[in-house]
Every structure is written in structure tokens, then in C-alpha cells.
Length: 222
Image 1 (cartoon, rainbow, N blue to C red):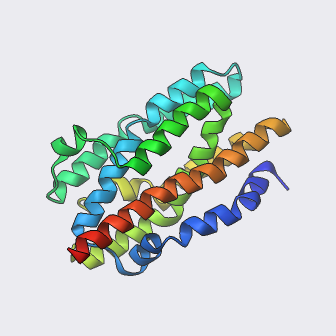
Image 2 (image 1 turned 180 degrees about the vertical axis):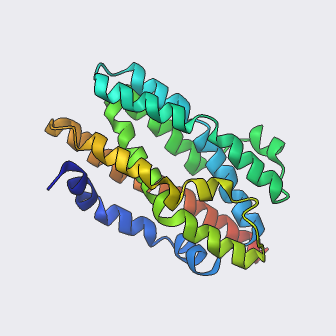
């Protein structure tokens, strides 16, 4: 078993728990209201805007040249993706300026805060747990969610779905890149750090969707 296969196997329960979140399941099946999609994009903006900085921080705190090179490549790929999210928000009638000057919900802020903490105080390799969860779930779900949302919102074009489409199945080469990267780690301590943090990030990322679901229920009840 390769290390990537071990990572997938040992985090399977955490992955299944994420996929069982009611909001995730319901959105894949039935889509969602425009307001809920805009709320999701808002949370996405407030964690995606940190990606470049987190990658740079991890690169600055490791002497592993192979890992540094991979992080630099990630940085070149990921820089500016938060601008796509703001464009999607504007295309769907939201207020990108309000989002830009606002802040994410508590769950989003906790996830971002932990990402910085983990890199600085646990290991720069801890960030790979986040990459595994966020990229893996995007490739698995983004296109399904985009299709369901387009149907529920009665939209024919992909206007407003740039972020989802670019992080869906077309982004599968990133997963292949990640797999090659982590399969190069033979040190068991490094492997355990990545596995443990992937499990943590499944929970932290899942909390954002739990919060979005609770907010949607409150809005519906009102």
C-alpha cells in the first residue's frame, strides 16, 4: 500500500462523516437557494484568500527542498483564486465588496486559524492534511454541486460557477500531483502528521457546512 492509499484508508471514516452532512447530501441531490450558494461562496472566499499565504508560510518553515518546490508550484497555481469567487458572487447578484471587507463565520475562522497554528507549531507538513481534504472534496463534489445548483436556480450558463468548475473534475491533475508528492514521504512521523491533520481538517471543513445548514434552517424558519 502506498502512503497515499494509507492516507485515504485511515481517513475514510472522517471522509464519510463529511459526506454525510445533511447540507452536503441535500445540495448534491436538490441544489440550493441562491442565498445559500452565496453564503457558501462567502465562506469559500474567506478561507481561499489565505491559501497563498499558508503555502508561503509552510515553504518558509521547511528545509525539505522537494517539499518547498511542490509548495512553490502550488503557490503559482493557487494565487488569485479568491478573485474568481468574488466574480461569481457579483454574477449572481451578491455584493463582492461587502464580502471582501467582511469576515467568514466562526467555523471558517477556526479552520483558517488552525491551519496557521499547525504549520507554525506542529509541522509545515501539517498543511498537506488541508490540501488533501479541500482539493479532494472539490474534485469529488464541485461539478455535482454546480450541476445541482444550476438546475435548482434555473440557470443555463456557467456564469457564477467559475470557482466550482475550475476546482471540479478538471482539477484532477492536482490530486495526481498531491499523490506523487505524499508518496515520496517515507518518514513515519511525517506520514502520521499528514494523516492526523487530514482527519482534523475534515472535521473543521465540515463544521463550515454544518454552520451553513443551521443558518439556512433559521432563515427558512423566519
